[in-house]
Image 1 (cartoon, rainbow, N blue to C red):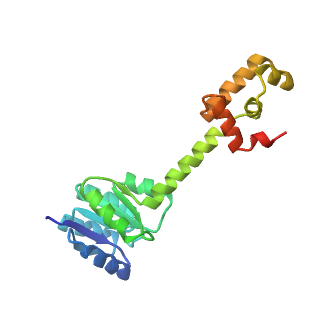
Image 2: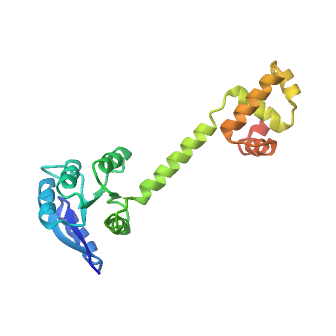
Image 3: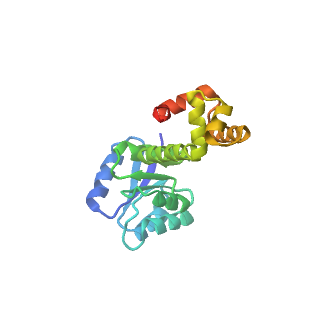
Amino acid sequence: MTPITVLLAEDHETVRQGIRLLLESQPDILVVAEAASGVDAVQHCKTTQPNVVVLDISMPEMNGLAAAKAIKMAVPHAAIVVLTRHDDDAFVQELMAAGASGYVLKQSRSSELLSAIRTVANGGHYVDTWLTRRAKADEEERGVQRRMAITDREREVLRRMAIGHSNKAIASDLGISVKTVEVHKANGMRKLNLHGRIDVVRFAMLHGWLQEP
Protein backbone atom coordinates (compact mmCIF):
# COMPACT_ATOMS: atom_id res chain seq x y z
CA MET A 1 0.00 0.00 0.00
CA THR A 2 1.37 3.39 -1.01
CA PRO A 3 1.50 5.61 2.09
CA ILE A 4 -0.03 9.07 2.33
CA THR A 5 2.89 11.48 2.25
CA VAL A 6 2.55 14.39 4.67
CA LEU A 7 4.30 17.72 5.14
CA LEU A 8 3.96 18.91 8.73
CA ALA A 9 4.03 22.70 9.23
CA GLU A 10 4.04 23.79 12.88
CA ASP A 11 6.29 26.40 14.47
CA HIS A 12 6.39 24.90 17.98
CA GLU A 13 8.97 22.12 17.92
CA THR A 14 7.55 20.14 20.83
CA VAL A 15 4.08 20.14 19.30
CA ARG A 16 5.49 19.31 15.86
CA GLN A 17 7.45 16.34 17.18
CA GLY A 18 4.42 15.05 19.04
CA ILE A 19 2.31 15.20 15.88
CA ARG A 20 5.07 13.52 13.90
CA LEU A 21 5.18 10.63 16.38
CA LEU A 22 1.42 10.25 16.04
CA LEU A 23 1.51 10.25 12.25
CA GLU A 24 4.48 7.91 11.97
CA SER A 25 2.72 5.39 14.21
CA GLN A 26 0.25 4.88 11.36
CA PRO A 27 1.24 2.34 8.69
CA ASP A 28 -0.45 4.30 5.92
CA ILE A 29 1.05 7.72 6.67
CA LEU A 30 4.60 8.93 5.97
CA VAL A 31 5.93 12.33 7.09
CA VAL A 32 8.25 13.50 4.30
CA ALA A 33 9.14 16.95 5.66
CA GLU A 34 8.68 19.41 8.51
CA ALA A 35 8.42 23.20 8.45
CA ALA A 36 8.61 25.75 11.24
CA SER A 37 7.34 28.71 9.21
CA GLY A 38 4.91 29.46 6.43
CA VAL A 39 7.73 30.25 4.01
CA ASP A 40 9.44 26.92 4.75
CA ALA A 41 6.12 25.11 4.33
CA VAL A 42 5.67 26.48 0.82
CA GLN A 43 9.27 25.71 -0.15
CA HIS A 44 9.24 22.15 1.25
CA CYS A 45 5.91 21.54 -0.42
CA LYS A 46 7.45 22.41 -3.79
CA THR A 47 10.38 20.04 -3.26
CA THR A 48 8.62 17.07 -1.64
CA GLN A 49 5.24 17.24 -3.44
CA PRO A 50 3.29 15.72 -0.50
CA ASN A 51 -0.22 14.34 -0.73
CA VAL A 52 -1.28 16.27 2.37
CA VAL A 53 -0.02 19.37 4.20
CA VAL A 54 -0.87 19.65 7.90
CA LEU A 55 -0.75 23.39 8.45
CA ASP A 56 -0.90 25.53 11.59
CA ILE A 57 -2.48 29.00 11.25
CA SER A 58 -0.19 30.99 13.55
CA MET A 59 3.33 30.77 12.16
CA PRO A 60 6.20 33.24 11.65
CA GLU A 61 7.19 34.85 8.34
CA MET A 62 3.99 33.77 6.59
CA ASN A 63 0.78 32.87 8.42
CA GLY A 64 -1.26 29.79 7.66
CA LEU A 65 -3.80 31.61 5.53
CA ALA A 66 -1.16 33.09 3.24
CA ALA A 67 0.73 29.79 3.20
CA ALA A 68 -2.40 27.86 2.23
CA LYS A 69 -2.97 30.15 -0.75
CA ALA A 70 0.68 29.91 -1.81
CA ILE A 71 0.73 26.12 -1.47
CA LYS A 72 -2.40 25.69 -3.58
CA MET A 73 -0.85 27.87 -6.28
CA ALA A 74 2.51 26.07 -6.19
CA VAL A 75 1.30 22.48 -5.68
CA PRO A 76 -2.42 22.31 -6.56
CA HIS A 77 -2.70 18.58 -5.90
CA ALA A 78 -1.56 18.90 -2.25
CA ALA A 79 -4.54 18.71 0.10
CA ILE A 80 -4.33 21.00 3.12
CA VAL A 81 -5.50 20.14 6.63
CA VAL A 82 -5.51 23.14 8.94
CA LEU A 83 -4.59 22.19 12.52
CA THR A 84 -5.32 25.00 14.96
CA ARG A 85 -6.83 26.04 18.29
CA HIS A 86 -9.06 28.62 16.59
CA ASP A 87 -12.66 27.39 16.61
CA ASP A 88 -14.25 30.54 15.20
CA ASP A 89 -16.46 29.84 12.17
CA ALA A 90 -14.87 32.80 10.38
CA PHE A 91 -11.49 31.04 10.47
CA VAL A 92 -13.02 27.85 9.07
CA GLN A 93 -14.71 29.67 6.20
CA GLU A 94 -11.65 31.75 5.36
CA LEU A 95 -9.23 28.82 5.36
CA MET A 96 -11.58 26.64 3.32
CA ALA A 97 -12.00 29.48 0.84
CA ALA A 98 -8.21 29.73 0.64
CA GLY A 99 -8.01 26.11 -0.50
CA ALA A 100 -7.89 24.00 2.66
CA SER A 101 -9.74 20.68 2.49
CA GLY A 102 -9.70 19.93 6.22
CA TYR A 103 -9.98 21.84 9.48
CA VAL A 104 -9.10 20.18 12.78
CA LEU A 105 -8.84 21.58 16.30
CA LYS A 106 -5.67 20.90 18.31
CA GLN A 107 -7.80 20.36 21.40
CA SER A 108 -9.66 17.47 19.76
CA ARG A 109 -8.77 13.78 19.90
CA SER A 110 -5.85 12.65 17.77
CA SER A 111 -8.24 10.48 15.75
CA GLU A 112 -9.72 13.68 14.29
CA LEU A 113 -6.42 14.58 12.62
CA LEU A 114 -5.89 11.05 11.32
CA SER A 115 -9.41 10.95 9.90
CA ALA A 116 -8.92 14.34 8.28
CA ILE A 117 -5.65 13.32 6.63
CA ARG A 118 -7.12 10.14 5.20
CA THR A 119 -10.27 11.88 4.04
CA VAL A 120 -8.57 14.73 2.20
CA ALA A 121 -5.98 12.37 0.72
CA ASN A 122 -8.88 10.62 -0.97
CA GLY A 123 -10.25 13.87 -2.35
CA GLY A 124 -12.77 14.61 0.39
CA HIS A 125 -13.33 17.45 2.83
CA TYR A 126 -13.21 17.18 6.60
CA VAL A 127 -14.28 19.55 9.38
CA ASP A 128 -13.68 18.69 13.03
CA THR A 129 -16.70 16.87 14.46
CA TRP A 130 -16.92 19.31 17.37
CA LEU A 131 -17.36 22.14 14.88
CA THR A 132 -19.92 20.25 12.83
CA ARG A 133 -21.90 19.38 15.96
CA ARG A 134 -21.85 23.02 17.04
CA ALA A 135 -22.93 24.15 13.59
CA LYS A 136 -25.79 21.65 13.63
CA ALA A 137 -26.88 22.80 17.09
CA ASP A 138 -26.72 26.44 15.98
CA GLU A 139 -28.81 25.67 12.91
CA GLU A 140 -31.37 23.81 14.99
CA GLU A 141 -31.55 26.78 17.37
CA ARG A 142 -32.04 29.16 14.46
CA GLY A 143 -34.74 26.84 13.17
CA VAL A 144 -36.52 26.98 16.53
CA GLN A 145 -36.26 30.76 16.53
CA ARG A 146 -37.69 30.92 13.02
CA ARG A 147 -40.54 28.62 14.00
CA MET A 148 -41.22 30.67 17.10
CA ALA A 149 -41.30 33.93 15.15
CA ILE A 150 -45.07 34.20 15.18
CA THR A 151 -46.97 37.32 16.13
CA ASP A 152 -48.68 37.70 19.50
CA ARG A 153 -52.06 37.58 17.79
CA GLU A 154 -51.22 34.39 15.86
CA ARG A 155 -50.01 32.84 19.09
CA GLU A 156 -53.19 33.77 20.95
CA VAL A 157 -55.41 32.42 18.19
CA LEU A 158 -53.54 29.10 18.18
CA ARG A 159 -53.61 28.96 21.98
CA ARG A 160 -57.38 29.39 22.02
CA MET A 161 -57.71 26.88 19.21
CA ALA A 162 -55.74 24.34 21.28
CA ILE A 163 -58.01 24.93 24.26
CA GLY A 164 -60.97 24.14 22.04
CA HIS A 165 -62.49 27.50 21.18
CA SER A 166 -64.27 27.81 17.84
CA ASN A 167 -63.29 30.39 15.24
CA LYS A 168 -66.45 32.32 16.03
CA ALA A 169 -65.72 32.33 19.77
CA ILE A 170 -62.13 33.42 19.19
CA ALA A 171 -63.29 36.20 16.89
CA SER A 172 -65.78 37.42 19.48
CA ASP A 173 -63.29 37.30 22.35
CA LEU A 174 -60.56 39.12 20.42
CA GLY A 175 -62.86 41.58 18.64
CA ILE A 176 -61.85 40.52 15.15
CA SER A 177 -63.63 38.87 12.24
CA VAL A 178 -63.85 35.12 11.73
CA LYS A 179 -61.95 35.60 8.47
CA THR A 180 -59.11 37.32 10.34
CA VAL A 181 -59.03 34.46 12.85
CA GLU A 182 -58.64 32.01 9.96
CA VAL A 183 -55.79 34.06 8.49
CA HIS A 184 -53.94 34.22 11.85
CA LYS A 185 -54.48 30.51 12.36
CA ALA A 186 -53.16 29.61 8.91
CA ASN A 187 -50.12 31.88 9.22
CA GLY A 188 -49.25 30.64 12.69
CA MET A 189 -49.56 26.99 11.73
CA ARG A 190 -47.44 27.52 8.61
CA LYS A 191 -44.66 29.24 10.58
CA LEU A 192 -44.64 26.49 13.21
CA ASN A 193 -44.98 23.71 10.62
CA LEU A 194 -48.17 22.40 12.27
CA HIS A 195 -50.62 20.44 10.15
CA GLY A 196 -53.80 20.12 12.19
CA ARG A 197 -55.45 20.69 15.54
CA ILE A 198 -53.67 17.69 17.10
CA ASP A 199 -50.31 19.26 16.18
CA VAL A 200 -51.45 22.59 17.60
CA VAL A 201 -52.57 20.99 20.88
CA ARG A 202 -49.30 19.06 21.21
CA PHE A 203 -47.24 22.19 20.52
CA ALA A 204 -49.31 24.22 22.99
CA MET A 205 -48.80 21.59 25.69
CA LEU A 206 -45.04 21.45 25.13
CA HIS A 207 -44.71 25.21 25.41
CA GLY A 208 -47.02 25.73 28.35
CA TRP A 209 -49.71 27.61 26.48
CA LEU A 210 -52.52 25.62 28.05
CA GLN A 211 -51.58 26.77 31.54
CA GLU A 212 -52.11 30.42 30.64
CA PRO A 213 -55.36 32.20 31.55
